[in-house]
View 1 (cartoon, helix red, strand yellow):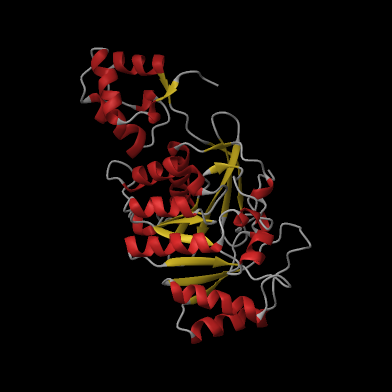
View 2 (tube, rainbow, N blue to C red):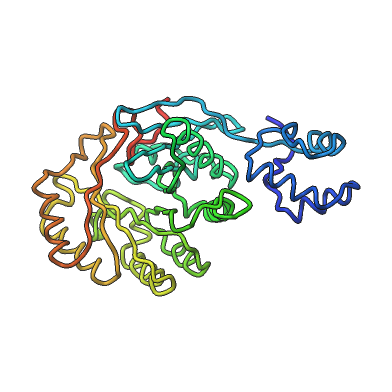
Length: 345
């Protein structure tokens, strides 16, 4: 592993200062940034409009720590899962999800996870470190390239629903989104980006204050404190009362409705009281509900509820004028579905 600084950790002003001190023209910083962000260059030798003396200086002082595909798997439904190797040898996973009208990149934000949700394979991994902004950015670039190669269509949407809790890597996640949406980067609309959180009240308020344009999803799974704590133990310290206040603050600041991600399990949250609690929560804060198919992680304590129970959830939510959709999982045969990313490769 190189001890040289990754050039992508610098902002353009910092690079301009370094170049000027070393007798290079400051405008070269803009050219270099164009190569590393717009064109996703993997080496300084690719930067064909730079003088040889500058290329040598860059090689001597910096590196570009781009990600590498360690293993790629393709599902029978077209989903592609990538195990990607980072510069220090750690591996995370990202997923290309194709549907008729869109291509979605599901990206990771941490090596492992900071939280302890019992139904999630990633949560069983120790959090080793946060991903850097460029490592998140590279996942999006990779999936866009795979989308063109395999489906002849560009990437359309991004969801931060891979490994890790995005709001526990706040600065790097927001920095990556800044690059992804910048005209000097990928130029994607923030309206096509969803950041999914298990619910960190303090950080939800913080992103609301930032005036962000992306959408927010919350991995909820129960609107009853005791039940949520039993499956998401961190809820004991950041309970539903605090989460609700933060989400109301988010809506008041952004006027963007919240999406609740919700899996229904047999014997856990499949009773009428669970449905009633969810309806009450949704009525207090403008929101919609994605009922997500459960993807097994070989834990007998978690079993998908019956279709009748799911239908009852949908009917009750609809009758209360709360939008509800059933989201079928994709990529299950390669462990690429929600909650299954665990570096089995």
